[in-house]
Length: 392
Ligand code: ADP
Ligand code: MG
Picture 1 (cartoon, helix red, strand yellow):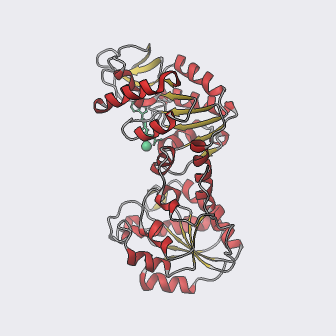
Picture 2 (spheres, rainbow, N blue to C red):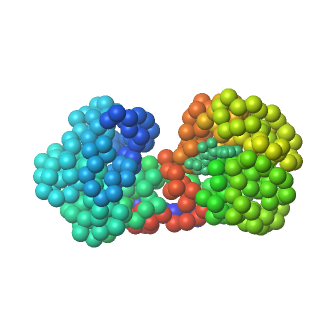
């Protein structure tokens, strides 16, 4: 059972005024877009609507302006960058609601695009303020949510506005809920989950939910340290969460043979790209050392499991991939996933970045654009931004 929501293909959009919530929360450097993956991810929806002669009014948040105008968090530079991507002028309104926005929307011609200023410049956005939602809705005839990265939040521009207009999903949101929904609800077996990253505490519900559904759960990254400590090994200076050792123990018991931990690890004498490092078998880490990556035997063992998979879901790097010396585990697991031929879904902000660095992004079936939103999906939690859309 997947999540079935109406999309822009299910309703008449031709020539209509359409408010599209996009996730243009992109990294900025010196007033320019530093990385545009999220802009590119929204193009299929924008281009489809333009082609059908809709008047496309885009809105998004950027950063954390805390309900007031912050010049560095203006979306204005994003409008210029978007122009380059779609090869068409993009209008910009210096407010997302009120007279400025209303005027700009009114003047917008069919087949043209307008970007509204940062929704979080208004305190009503994060409060899901009724009046702000109504004002946003007044700009258009249809609401399209394509902001998967914000779908876990009930804000005025994601949930409130959907109460006032026919609300459907764009292509990005559709693809995200299709792939992430399918892996958790209806995966082709064998289903292998790979979890890593920094902490268990962020992801307990993800581990629990996946543990109940997967054939194998492979655990690496910093998160593995707490499991190793729960098994009685000293992890010395490693990143560890003492407060969830009990939970880790429960998960080990619950998982039984389905849960695999590293059998060897790469340790370093300090947290540094140029640290001294060596490989040790599973066991206690010497005083003063810390675990930075999974070891070669673990890569091998995890690789053998991944090879058999029909579906793979992956969240969390296997090591401190930001340092080349400790990116080997992550890169080799990425290779194993790529070579497995399985339907593969990667979620999580750092995981997506790590896959891109590995050069294997093209080999992955779906790399989610969402951080917390993709983790919530993997935990089986309903996203309010998705729930607010019309059912099929
Ligand atoms: P995601 O954003 O994909 O959900 P996380 O934010 O949970 O992933 O984790 C990513 C971070 O985990 C990276 O910054 C990486 O350096 C860190 N990490 C992975 N393994 C270790 C480790 N052994 N020790 C410390 N940090 C680690
Ligand atoms: Mg992260």
